[in-house]
Structure formats: structure tokens, C-alpha cells
Image (cartoon, rainbow, N blue to C red; front, top):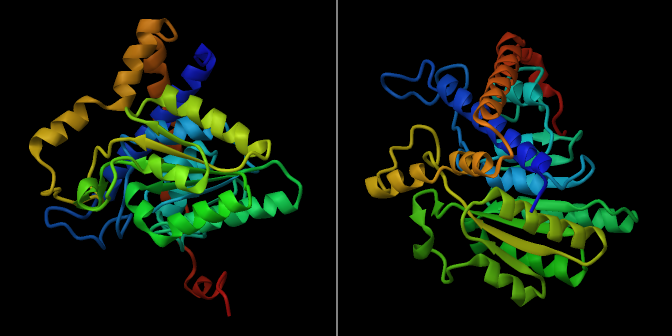
Length: 327
């Protein structure tokens, strides 16, 4: 069992992620109502939020260094923040501002941060071969840094999944593959697209450990990730971890979610991982209710400062459209 200090750190990370995304959700709809206009408001375009999936990011990234490489999906904020990305620069990028990670040109689905070796993409499974490349580079450089690839359960049916696991195992690379199984690939349920119940079972086909976390438990994620990361660092090769997690919101903001039943939505909401974890923390004596309240208050202050930075930052100059591009 992790120490109380570690438990409190996991909780803090999960809360700051949740507050950031809840705040972003409200801002996103500014100017987009009453008739939803995806191009309107201070944050135009699509927005994919990860509320409910915080245990995955917090539990895995707790074991990582800034020099470890992380690749994520089109739903990246929780992983980015857990891996140490600057919240102010992240917020500025989402707002399309010059002070953002990509000078406001990438937006929330295309975050790139050399300071934390983080990258993500809107292309399904794109981050998997990239993580393998990072791990190969680390090995050739004689470093014990590792790569972690976060991907959704739908990506496990892509060729890049199988190619990446095969090469990582063949070359015994330090990669941890983390499958965030939230049961839905946009509007397609997993059982309509995948022949097996657990993608972690596929690990054995490539000669690597496959671990299933069935209940979105941050402690279980932390423990499994600790073993996988340690194995990768000592040259033991890759691992595959699958976490059954929950997507509390739609695939994107504005998604009416007509494909999900009311009963399912109620069940998913009731098992909110943060609230469940907080009950466990109080019962174990690791934290008190005032302790929890203080964490939420501090997170709100941190997020408010980041949003203010983003709102007050300038937009890129029109001529900047010709900068930072390949000729």
C-alpha cells in the first residue's frame, strides 16, 4: 500500500485535473449558446475532456521523470498535467494565444512540450510508434529513461498498436503501453468493435506482461505502473496496462450522447473515482474533510491563475502564421 504522502499526492493531482477541466468546460460554452456554434467563443473548435479518467494519469505519471517521454491522445489534458506540463502555458495554447506551448497554433489536441517530453495527436494510435521511437533512442543513448504511451481501447484495433507492441518486445525497449478503456470509441461500444473483453490479454502474444485494472482505482494503477516502469528502466522490456476507466462526459463537448442510456450515465456518475477515493482517504485516516476541502480550494486558485494568464495573453500576430512551419 502506498504511503499516506503518496495517497495525498495522487488525490491532489486528480483534483487539479478535474478542476482544470470543469473550468475549461464552462469557458468552452461561452458564446456557443443558445444555438451551439462550435466556432464561437474564446475556445473554438472541438474539445475532448477526460473527467473520470484522472486515476490513469495520476497513477502512472507519479512514477515518471520529466526526461521520460509521454505520448497521449486527442483527450490529453489529464496526462499532460500529471506529467508536469505548465498549466498556464497549456491554458494559453487552448485559448490560441501566443504564450501557449505551440504559440497558439496547435490547440488542445496537438500539444507539444519539450520541457516534459510530451506530445499528443488527434490521430488514433499515432502516439504508440512515437513512444517506441523515444524508447529506442533512449536505449541507444544508454539512458534509463522510458517512454509511456497512453491510448484508448479503440486504438487497440489499429495496426499501429500491434506493430508497436511487436517492435518494443522484439527490441526489448523501455515502453509502458497504457490502455484507457472507457468502453466507448466515440459512439461505438467496445463489444461491437473488439473481439475480446480485455486488451491486456493481447500482451501475451508479444511476450510481455499484461495487467488489467478493472475498477478505475488510482492505488491499483499506481502499483501496477510502478512495476511496469521499474521493469522498463532496468532493461526488462515493455508492459501493457489496461485500466477500465469512465468517461463522465461526452466524446466531445456538445455531444448529446444519444448512444448512452440514462441508466448507464447514472451508474458512471455514481462511481466517480475522485469521490470514491476521497471516501477511502477519510476512512483510512490519510486525510480529513478539511484536508480535502483545502486541496480543492488550492486547485481552484491554481486554475483561476492559469485561466487569467490565458485570457490576458495576446493572440499571435497574423504574420506569425509563416513561422514554426516546415518549408
